[in-house]
Length: 457
Image (cartoon, rainbow, N blue to C red; front, side, top):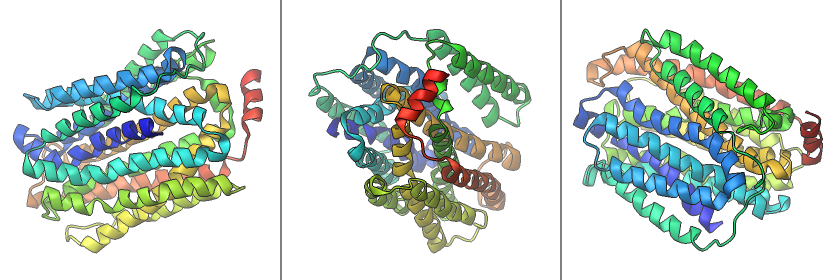
């Protein structure tokens, strides 16, 4: 537990700390809001590309080994990012950091499901989710304080220290968890997965560019062909047979929609608070504590509550409904800054996320047969990170289509920026409502029945 919690906090810190430094990074390198979106998008893109092969490889080579490798890659890339001589060098380092952090994410959940029995699994996964939300809580504040005091490069120094701290705990684990040591690794499938995701998302985030009109359909077709290959392969890098389980599939897509609707909240608010709100990075960071702090307070508790509930649809569905109300409030945000309106939005979204995440993750992992939980963990992580990546894709596409090339945040552009927020969160609200429907309609399916479905397929 200590080992996985130490690593679980690194990724959300790395994801959110730079949000409050985006304005300073833009000033240093002369970049607008669209280009600044690449800092988060490439981090998530690296995560999604790495998670699928890492989930498969961890069951073959050992989960501890993959976890340690991810720590090393993250620390090395963070060291280079702190010395970035140019904007695109920084973006490249963020891609590699996402790649390394994915290897930690995908193994931490799986290791907990192998160690803790089903009667305590909701609590254990709730602790893991709490660590993630703790990172989300501390990230904006730490990022704002560090950016104001020593500059945005100092954020990477903190990550290096945390990686070293986590490594000391990993060294205390002397055994390996290798549920499928005799399986083979699908390297060709891994390459196809990476290429298809890269082409598709490159087109989405640059939707106004001429070449994007070809990249989006090409990436979608390539991704469909890749998934078809996975479904027919005897040893695929992504076990598509898991999607034969209705509970697993619908809960997984509900998680995708949850993160797809909510991740761009921090991105837009970090820009909104420092432009229209006229707050410093430190002040904005303190205000952004509200949402993740509520998520931290609720996650472990909701995981434990879900262990005792017979109908496990209730908490995830209620969480999505509460979050929908918070997302809807963004559609009416204006150029007159109202701090209490912003706080109310974050309270609703934080409560919804806290009620949804742990119970939903527990259902996903429990619905998978025991021998496939390593791969199921990878699917959970992929759903989460893909949702985050799509969320940033929505944000960047709306910026491109509404703000255009003049994507700066000068006072005369505040009205257009507010229109961009309205458009993005109208889409996000639709995702929330769809996720609520999936959470309620997923049914209940045990792992023994799921094993039968997989054997039959």
